[in-house]
Image (tube, rainbow, N blue to C red; front, side, top):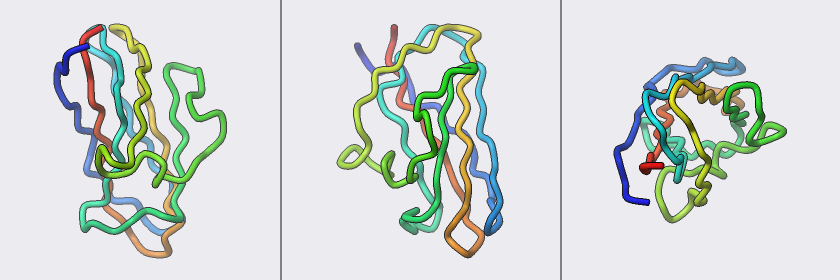
Length: 112
């Protein structure tokens, strides 16, 4: 599976205690190799949580710490989730950091 491209969602500012959704309707047939969740200032998102879905199917089942997906390849797990054209990716992030945060969600997309 060769890398096709990275798809950036955001940045979005999330107020303390708020939840914000990041969504994207796939424009092709891809494999989501990794998902990176990055705070713009470099802050570790150790308290915030994320729920990830493809269409109406939960990938995370429950909310999980954003730090599971990490800001780089040393932390972010290999997922290899199929994402066909027209399917909807969504990540719902709840800010539990106690301060406003600015977040990017980045998808590492490989060709299907």
